[in-house]
Length: 328
Image (cartoon, rainbow, N blue to C red):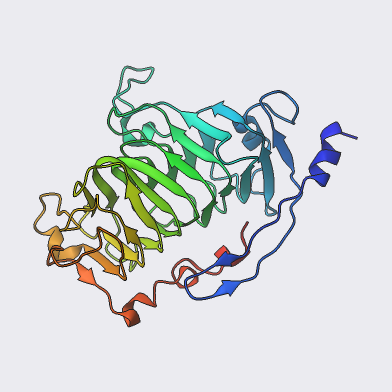
């Protein structure tokens, strides 16, 4: 018997129920880990990429990969053929997946990597989930430097951290649906940006300096873009120095519902990125904001304050689908 088999069978993870906007859906399960990653050699693999590579292509069952504490500096890729993969860290602050590329860094051909190329983790596989993991880009304040880019559909992060400066988190796929719960996301400029439909529930959104939180590029026919539910919007940025968002593309769609906005949020709330036409096409809205930055008196006139009836439609299951009740 493989000496790691017994330990994997004994180590269990209790999945806590998801609490949605108005309802609680019980969802308990215990998990046997299929693969273990440990830098010290006490697992099946010493690198995360090696464990990903070991997952069978297009496997229908879920593959659980347990990552022991440690800092894993790797440029990671989850291909589209690696479906239903779950990464579970031993400890949030101690299980760190990191890299330090940035957009202006030269590749082996002497070309700039670009924003997408700077990502430390590319997620193309559908059904991916992560829990108790820190994803970090340690390039520093050197321009665009992505920690994670996500293209796969039905992707879930729970109790994870995303660390960086500009362009930290890139929900990229136009047809990708993503769910973030109890996560911490930090950055400076446009640090949550992209095309995907993504819900951030009870997360901490932390601005490390003046700038913009979101830069959504929502497609014209998508009724939803980025939705923040009961999040804490805070940071160390100076007072009145951070916008809630600006439109990377004309139909940028971002909504904050029952969020706590700290004093670093600018009174006008939103910026048009010097694109007057985007004021007619972008959809920026709030409902029930509280905190020092929640005064809507001076919000830009082309933004919206939702009614209770309008806000009710922003339910995770309604927006993303029932997969979020079953995936863990």
